[in-house]
Length: 324
Ligand SMILES: [Zn+2]
Image (cartoon, helix red, strand yellow):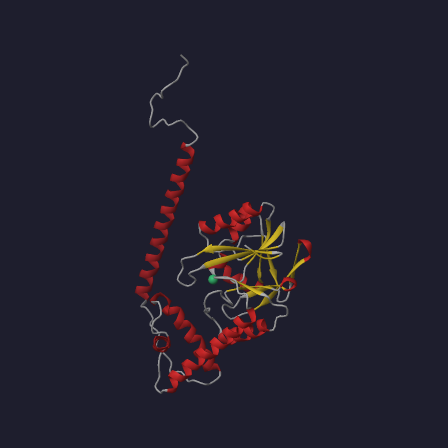
């Protein structure tokens, strides 16, 4: 889908309860393009990216960027390099979070405010927007008014927040971007009323904070889980932990601002023996998974090899044909 003269969206259907619509991959530029995010490390994304490249014919991926380290955005970086020869770009402080997902070489880092120059004078600015995660960044193509927001702003829902103070500051910064016309989020539909949406997010956070202070204002000490249950009585159960994390983010900010006090909890620490048992089980599980994968690969290879030769398992001597 064409978003603006230089931007196309590849919308990949998703069934993850955290983002039920689509996960989006964007391409910027013509010929040598920049991709923003690349999806989870599953075949579906490979097909969609390759399908896009086939459909647009001339496009080649020169740079593969990410908006943050989460696996549904950075799962295919190695593949993007090995299969498509893309150079990987990422913020330096995010590299340690990408462990195991980066190729050994061909990775370039960028700084806050850096401008990426693409063919045809297309210029994309990277802006650090911590909050959803510590390494969240957005990309801004100011000439065309297109903002790539990753999970900092989502198309169809509100996002989860790692550091709420940072997040609110990042939102404020985005609300002030000049010439903003459309937001291309990491998941869900494009946002064509960007300023209203950002203001809605700012208001949403203010509203959630007020809900929490109202609940606590009734007196008594509550856990973040109890507060979550009061705030979201009808929530899909699979989303409760995520909602609790949001509540805790607010509580942390309220604690930092000394608006609530905390009664320390008592963490559960498994016994040394139990920990050892768990580690042993984890190792066993890994071994079995590795073995299963190996057999699967071997079988697939054998199947492919079989295609090269006559079906000797079906025929000792195949029928032969001769002209009458
Ligand atoms: Zn995501």
